[in-house]
Image (cartoon, rainbow, N blue to C red):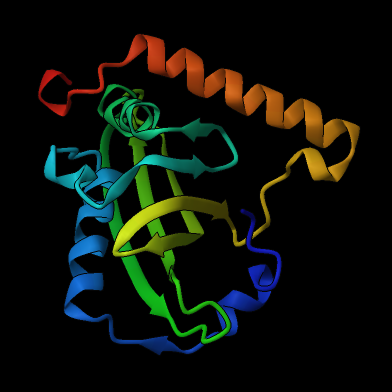
Length: 172
């Protein structure tokens, strides 16, 4: 479910205040980005949710848990430098964040990423979690042969992580 209508223009969208329910979801999702996963962090995800970023496509809650539970293994820290809720009336079922996150790898190398994070909600549950680095649309099979190869690689990566990283955040 890529966000085709927005991407680079998303940086120009105005901010808005989240509702209390949205703020709760945001706090839990940010705890995942901060490499602090807990059982509560996943409470707002549907069992059939999909997570898509430039690295992987994780289908199902267990696969999503493995992706985020693996972060403490790769990063010594992950800090949210800033975020804002974007006011995009064209997608009333989506919660969109302009997120700047600083990752410090276990090697000491640091990387700061600005991303467009789109959470597609249904009945207050996250059905689709899309992260687009630098607000650039993720490549999919719809982008031709190379897109198909890239999508296959992302799905394979998610399956590999799922096999190697526990779904229980208490075992991380």
